[in-house]
Image (cartoon, rainbow, N blue to C red; front, side, top):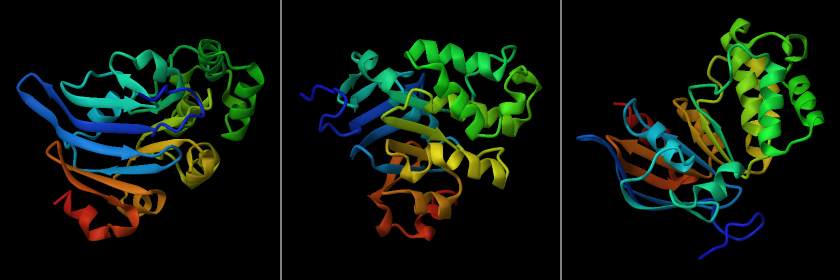
Length: 234
């Protein structure tokens, strides 16, 4: 089995027959794919299709009930400790303490990952939050909170980015500010959930389409038509 050490040849993600249920409701059924290091996977599907459940499994936050899952060479859930510090998660929850300032939040996460403080200051400046860095997160707009959450997700230079609608609540200026941190040219493998079919296809190397928890599409992005993606929402 692959060692999962930084710089090895393990795929970023390898799933085989992964399933997950919440009580009697099955959220994912028989999901299988491999994503190479540095590649981008766009995940499409209607609400309730299983996209967020998939992301939470990859982040080590949910246990798969069937199949096998490997992230950065680590088998989940038993070896989640080996991959968790190498993964950056941006979900619907910004995972920020609302009563702490932006700077305090990022410094806290920096200490958890052994990241030097200059990295915090560089990120705050890059996303245009320097003027609000000492304000509590609860006082920020949704767009500013999203920018701060993106800083948290990339703070430790992860090898795999899990991005759930990363441009939500961002105006064009905000989207441009975060693009160098989470865009296609950043380097890490990415799993990107998006409802913007055209933009998601343009960002992706591979496409996973989910319908009712099942794998309806798995193909190179160049082989997927816009109509195929839109059909998942019909």
